[in-house]
Amino acid sequence: MRSPEAIAAEALSLPVADRAALVLRLAESLDEHYDADSEDLWAAEVASRFEALGQGTAETVTTAEALAVARARLSARRG
Image (cartoon, rainbow, N blue to C red):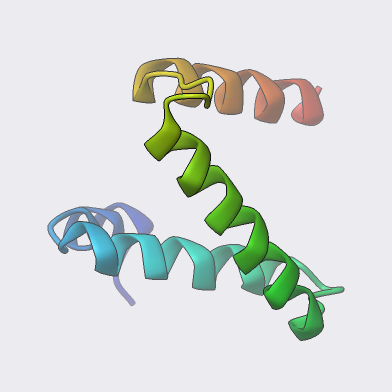
């Protein structure tokens, strides 16, 4: 069995769209209460956010900022 590090290294070499699809699939696998019907709601939310980006009204953060927030939240959950 391949190590998670080897799988991650291979995944990081994928094109952006493929990495995004993989992230979504992995995230869905963690959610025991995944509701397929909610996908339409998420699609509408994504479209709304995309429109806000195009209009210049969205508040954005850098990748480093987003990762720092995510790591802090994970760290807090782990105690």
